[in-house]
Structures are given as structure tokens and as C-alpha cells.
Image 1 (cartoon, helix red, strand yellow):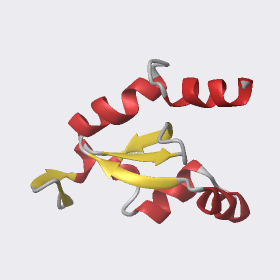
Image 2: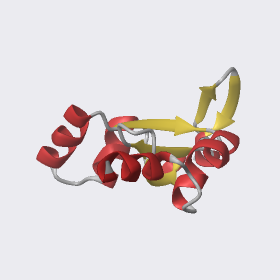
Image 3: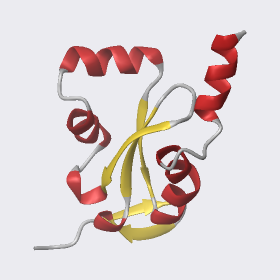
Image 4: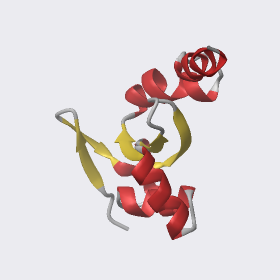
Length: 97
């Protein structure tokens, strides 16, 4: 099977080495899958959120799916999944006020 390649930040990478990530309007990552799990952001969003009306609601609220290199994933998404990001802390402070 031929290897699918993508360009991210000027680098050509195998799709399988990348990650699709669902980001919320606050910039926090809420879902992630390996790049070869989908061939585009719409398909990845469908994998994360199966029901169309839920995807539509997320899109209206500012959720979006991005393809990240492994390095970008470690920098921008991993902290969200490991509980060390500041995104949710900022939302908690805003709600507490």
C-alpha cells in the first residue's frame, strides 16, 4: 500500500506519524487519533463525534480539527491530555468569578 504524505510547517511527513486533534474554543485538545485514522479533518471529526448534529454544534461553538506533527502534538496537545495545560484552569477561574 502506498504511503500517504502530508506537508506540515514546510516538512513532508508520513500521515501515519501525525495526529488529528479536536481542539475546543478555549484551545484545549479534547480528542486525538493517529493520522492514518482519517484522511481529512471532516473524517477525523466524524471519528471523534459520530452524530452530525453534535459535530455541527461543536463547529458553531468554535471546535476545530487540526493535523499536527508529532512534535506539535507533544507541544500543543499532550499537556491537555496529561492534565498539565492551562486551558481548563482558565475556564475554571472564569466560572468561579
